[in-house]
Image 1: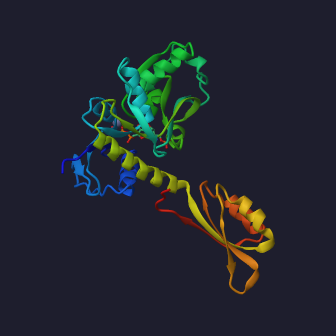
Image 2 (image 1 turned 135 degrees about the vertical axis):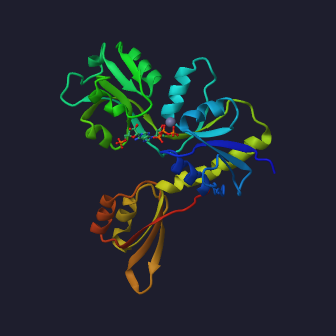
Image 3 (image 1 turned 60 degrees about the vertical axis):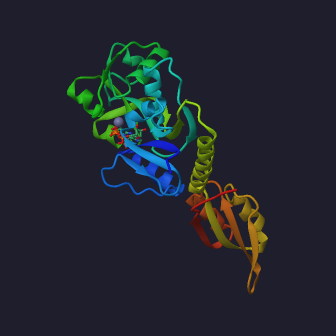
Amino acid sequence: MKPLLRIAVQKKGRLAEGSLDLLERAGLGITPAPGALTCRARGLPVELLFVRDDDIAALVMRGVCDLGIAGENTLREEALQAPGSTPLQTVRALGFSRCTLKFAAPANGSVCSVQDLQDKRIATSYPAITAAFLEENGVTAQCVTLQGAVEIAPALGIADAICDLVSSGATLAANGLEAFATVMQSQAVLVRSPKPWDEAKEALLARLLRRMDGVIASRATKYIMLNAPKDAIDEITALLPGADAPTLMPLAGRNDQMAVHAVCRETIFWDTLEALEARGAHAILVLPIEKMMG
Ligand code: PRT
Ligand code: ZN
């Protein structure tokens, strides 16, 4: 059967693993051959196209692919570089490949605020986003566009500051740079082509989204099991983050104790476990949930 949906994903890089993992967990059944540019899914009538992240927006915009998984940073840059074109529709924020586009400059140097950027040179891979931000802030500066190794530009003497993506901050620190302003937060998103679709395509997307939502919801959600003294049950269940209606069960041979099972829809931190233990909870288990629906 002909694939109904074609999805553009990054071939190799910081988006690739998260994209494939999400699609695989949504039941696509994908085993790309090494070096392959396309891969037909076994589980749904879907074909993947493996490309560079910079090409994803254009492929979806032109309708070559119906869907794409890209970083919001590249999508915004593309949109600003093609003013007047119909923007791609973001159908889901996917929660991985999170990063922040930031301005940074040599630590203890003369540039430490957005206003200090006046008449300076800024190295970036995102010239349109950078220019728009500077304009909003009433600053005039020169953008030096580099596709990689942006952090080394000040040391090479070709820029006074940079505007680049940061996740851990280790690359900035290793290059003696300090961030002083945030331009945008970014994460991977699923975008769809602006072209109208037929009913079969829409139905397949709806099915895929339901599954993706199940995968995304299950990531933050955990199943918690513990035993607790009966007289502390109210206090203990109130501590469970994002849990509605926990299951309470008697424990054989222990009239003073109960078992508590609950689905927690928010992150369970160590602090919470310590607070539970302090109120007498014991045999506490936190388990991952693989899939969720309904
Ligand atoms: O080959 P292709 O063109 O497809 O890949 P690429 O090299 O252009 O992109 P890639 O794989 O590096 O990044 C793809 C997308 O991942 C980006 O567009 C962002 O949406 C997202 N992402 C998330 C990041 C980072 N985190 C990130 N840390 N992209 C780049 N970085 C770089 C950053 O540019 C800097 O050089 O990592 C360095 C900083 O990392 P830390 O951890 O030291 O702060
Ligand atoms: Zn790229």
